[in-house]
Amino acid sequence: MTRLTRREWLAISATLAIACERSQRSSDTRTPRRVVSLSPGTTESVFAIGAGSRLVGRSKFCDFPAEAAKLPSVGGFVDPSFEAILGLAPDLVIGVQGPGGRELADRLSQRGIATYFPGTDSFAEITAMLHGLGERLDSSAGAKRVTDDITAQRKAVAKALEGRPRPRALMVFGLRPIVVAGRGGFPNEMLTLAGADNVVTSERYPTLGVERVLALDPDVVIDTTGVAGHKTEQLHADLPGWKELRAIKEHHLVVIDDERVMRPGPRVGQGLVVLAKALHPKVSIPS
Image 1 (cartoon, rainbow, N blue to C red):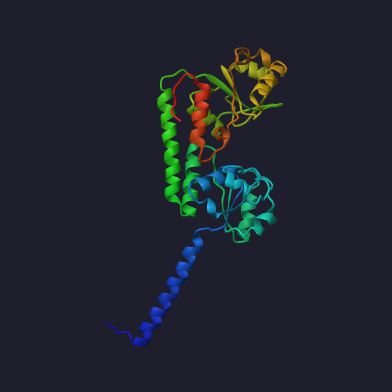
Image 2: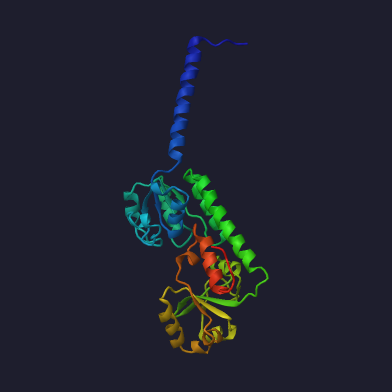
């Protein structure tokens, strides 16, 4: 067996020490300290998992929690200011999949800035997004707590609605033109879990004419356009042909202006409870 000289041992020890130091530096930089978030859902999520102190910038649409609104804005998600983002010196930029996301991620990567743009178009993807943020921001325990809450709220709704009749629903995002929720995607899943069946069979977010809406004949219309309640009812009544809709005649119009219902993020379980209660007002659903 070959014996190492003292000089060789010292050389090896020095090499190992340098390697450990480099490894520690690499480990330190692996957890981002300056994060810019470009979507309301990811901004909420960072705060919800307990990593809000790492946020240094947001999109102009990020308004919850209140602390988020105090952060510098870098513009919208589709058209953020690249210079404003760089000016905040982030080591991680987050958002969701959407228009311009891939191009922005590529430009940031060229500058050595890490990005995370996950899908959030289903409960499963929202859960994965939360865990992904937890892993990146050293907040896995916080992410698990949030996702456990979402799971508990889903189960509570499912239990409360078990065996209940399922109304045929039309979820509306716009009235001029009429834009609705189709099959596939997050809004359709919310409808299904909230105890309703979507009357629209086409994919994603189709635009429909009044004649088509009349033919679909939903039991209930869910308006998510964000207009104040009584004004929304008047708007529906004034739309040409719309007042002939059975759901409107029978006053089965549900106005949803609660952002939790349509914002894929940590409060999605709460949003599901809100929607389920609106669709099934006589059913006791724990919040």
